[in-house]
Image 1 (cartoon, rainbow, N blue to C red):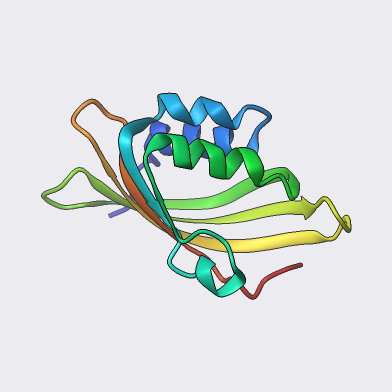
Image 2 (cartoon, rainbow, N blue to C red):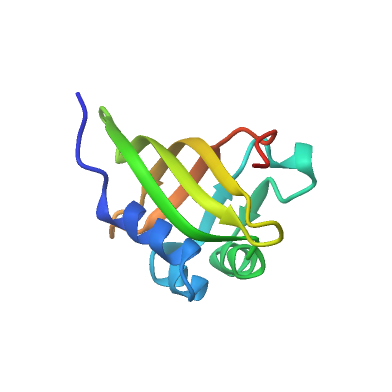
Length: 129
């Protein structure tokens, strides 16, 4: 059964792709963990621990512009405050102006207060344009 994507996740997307990535601080638990299991294959961080590391990562990752997300599907994991979201992202590479298309599968858990506690974001590291 599909559900509406939790607002905290949509706010996370808006923050990390917008002009003020430090606003993710309000969405994450202080000891939050964000993992990108395939990122090591392209030489970027695969695990960020703590909200300062998460803010720092997205503040330094300004290689895209004009992000758009579409076709979100959300499923709540039964018996837990965990979610699985699938969506498509489109952007433009700043260096070349080339289009960037990516499909994402994201699993995350929420803390008791509704903030993001942990997230694993899966994407294809071979897509560069």
